[in-house]
Image 1: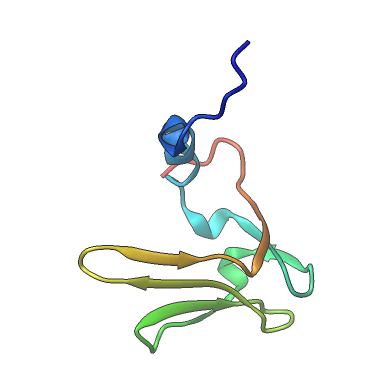
Image 2: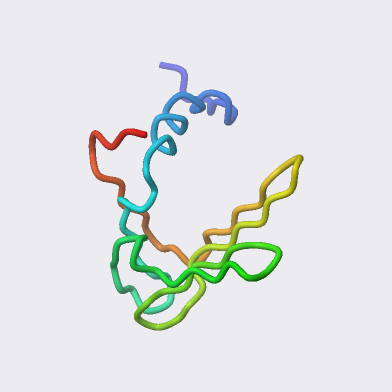
Length: 90
């Protein structure tokens, strides 16, 4: 059995299936206070060059998203765990 790792392209299909869903249906566990809540319940701050989602419980930053015409930057260091309902589709 070959145990050598693949590069990131080897999981493109699996990740494509995972991220092709309504993200508001997912639940996050805050890396700061460990509170689990639906992503739809996070506090969204959008009056800036990017988007910031904060925990409704402690106010900790869970997600930062900045987009340009050529790329996007996504920082999810504030999410300890992202739970996606099985069978979730676009």
